[in-house]
Length: 160
Image 1 (cartoon, one colour):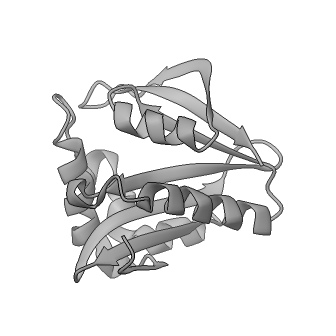
Image 2 (tube, helix red, strand yellow):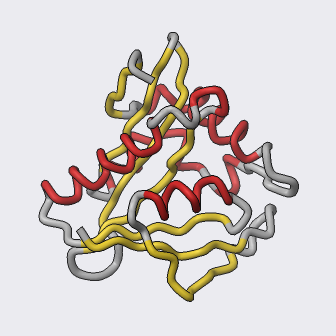
């Protein structure tokens, strides 16, 4: 994916971002995106991340939104969250996921962070492989979100 533009997310990316996330979730049986009830931050992504002292990026290719990723401080000193890493199916397995993870890690280092943490749906097996290939370790913790998708998530982290 040489011909991509990675830029800061904007609030007017809302419906393109919803389409990206919804399309990714639709690949997994039982995953339901309820934007207004469970993910309203997608409707004003730049405002959400600014309010949480974080940063969010959008990836464009061929005039379309094909990826996203964000980071914000996590509870605990020096830890940051890696969030909302989504890549359109046709743009996968071309190194974009690794580029976005590295982007977050660089941002975290630049802000004095020492560790990156993330939670990922237990069904997102391809994402688990990516995180592990990037040096993240799955911990023993899981959490149930009690959402429409009946999501259980694995915890991953990496010390920088």
